[in-house]
Length: 396
Length: 139
Image (cartoon, rainbow over all chains, first blue to last red; front, side, top):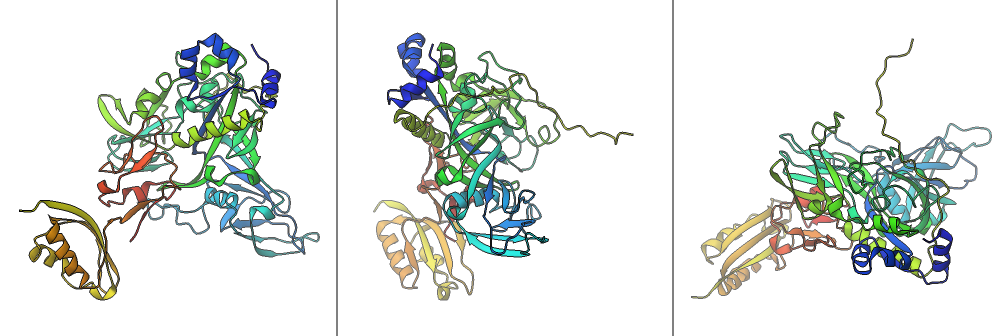
């Protein structure tokens, strides 16, 4: 048994023993659970993949004369201005003005909110165009200017939903190619796509949210951020397999961090043909090894994690809830799964290579004492379910 | 008789050379087997052609000497499709869409995506599906 404070002290004194979630299984097999639990202080987890529910709050400071922005665009991508005068919120999936979307299906969606976030972190010069209805205190009607992230007072990433605990494996049962946020899916189950770092993914290594909660310090694209709330659609009460791993989406995290501290390698705009734009983000989360049980759970292997195979031509869009089968991440990572007797080639949207890289970068920062753990101030709910949106008649 | 070899080439046709039957002469006069992967050779424009040529080293050399007389540039690396290695995140979305396995995962442990240009047939599927826009065509 160790306390958070003891682990933090060991990190501060540069003595912490840190392993990645990719290394810990073999280490525990070799040393034994009890000895390893005494020795290891932190296991690092990570993920890199598209996280649509991401965005950022930007503050531009005031022009002379002042403007109260009522509509604004960065690089022709609409931002939300229903905040204070020069605060805006940029969402990752926002399309560029005049993007033809799916008018000529499948659309290309070459540039949008996620790409603006990538360019911002990369230090590029971006265009701001804003309009105002004008007020006595904010007389300027229109502004067009150019800025970099360094010119902004704040550029804070505020992501309502990142780090899905587990996720669907998407296939296409129909006769034609479909274009989804899970990528391009060929007809008649010709391919399958998944999106998780599996055994390296944060919430799969802490399936009961024993160490990750509101207030946990996280590595966000190189910046030190935190979990500010449970993520949207967090459903801790999702059914679990024998290893305690949820058999579907389940937990999510709402994350925030300062974009000025981020590394552009881990903040990447994405374009999904026929679907839209998004942001791929690198997140690393340390798990303090407080006891043997917590260590044991970080030893989860891909073969013990099941993901639901879902048809994205009918069952996903029609919200039938049907799961065709469950497959393990070991099967997914082999490049081929077998579903109802048919072999299906597997692709993915989540980069294991980048996730491994992040887990190692975070481990190094903790070893050097540069990244301290923060004790959560509030646990994530374990019993909540995902509610549907009901279409009701207007109440009389 | 000399052994035959296959070489992947990319030819660049300047504007003035687009209307001459160069490939016909490679087959007819230089005994080369050609397998064209992709071509964009249109009148009044510059053009590109990516192809395999199979024949003896001597025939290929003579054929290429003939091609050069038309002011056509020969790129022996034959890369009409490129993958930016630095920008690639190795997500692996492309691999099921690549029909020849040119884009593939060599090591299951790291799931790094490798691009074997030799196997690329220039179908351009990777360009359509890459979420990060890291695959591109020279033409």
